[in-house]
Image (cartoon, rainbow, N blue to C red; front, side, top):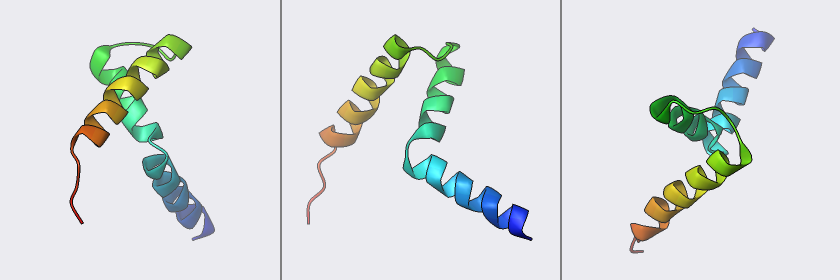
Length: 56
């Protein structure tokens, strides 16, 4: 039971910290982790995220 709780908490933290999004980015582009690829991910991800402005 504790193991399942730990795995759920870890999954939530990974989703909130964009680690899952980065993993999906790597899989989609067929790349491996590198500083340059992470920079590319950040530029694309946050560019899209903040381009969609939300109102109140």
